Length: 136
Image (cartoon, rainbow, N blue to C red; front, side):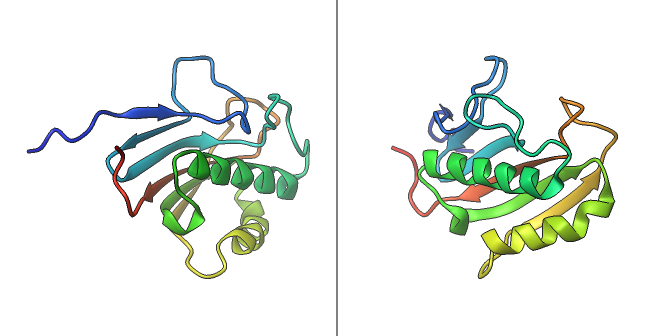
């Protein structure tokens, strides 16, 4: 089995930083693994308190920013996992998602969970992308 190229940890100033114990995104070869994105702006402020649609848009904007930081885009996203605190918001997420993935939506899983890292958060989305060009 080939060892491949070393993982590269990626980030972007468009998204709030981490505490250093995890990476926003990692890349190995032409695979991009994006950690769960939530409705925080670049300064770490919650966007859309008590507003699922606003949180969904910010979360997907953050996912898109991580894809771009990794040399990718929405077209390369193959899989997302969506964690929601209320499955009743599924139709709202579907509508927001359609605005981002009109032509070629990724495979996805949606799971209802009890809560996220902050009580005010209503969803988190992670993703896997396959890029056309391997990393240097």
